[in-house]
View 1 (cartoon, helix red, strand yellow):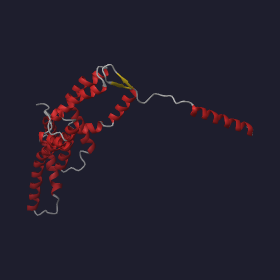
View 2 (view 1 turned 30 degrees about the horizontal axis):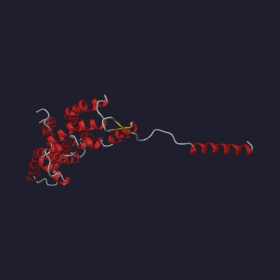
View 3 (view 1 turned 120 degrees about the vertical axis):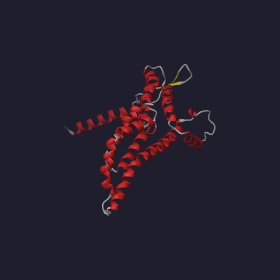
View 4 (view 1 turned 180 degrees about the horizontal axis):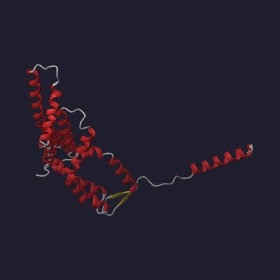
Length: 252
């Protein structure tokens, strides 16, 4: 290629680039707001997709803070500590057990949300905001049924809601922290009851070892097999899972 042909080629590429930049930009508008006959506003599909993708990032927090997951996981972690096991069952197993047991406990709530909010929204019977408000009702009722009035009063005063007709009138920003506080208190109460029999075994083993003069031997090593044997003989996992499910009113 000669030098003149090379310069012509460079000039053509620059001209094409300039024409591309000079052309008016075209594309899908990010936000389109259309007034509807009812006096409200309809948003474009692009904005709805953006809102849905943003909401998906809050799903882990919602699963942890708005369901039975927190109580179950805390109780199982306390149970592992009471037995004296450090890494067995592992954290992944405890989280998996808590997740699937939460799905079982929360299934009536999820079914009601699906029937009253998700399915009507898919059938275009409800607008997105209406579906969101409808889906909030069953979850809110579940949280209020597990929340203590004292905790609700505390967070309502913090948020400045001194006078309300009923707890259902409180916003979710008040109900959620009150629900978590109640869940932690309940989980610690159940964990305390689980700790007592294992603590008794530790005390008995420690007393026997001291009476035998074997103070150099760790009581935890000796008591661990006895605690495991007692937990297996009483069918401990079945009792713990049943107690956790019953504490939410499931099966009663």
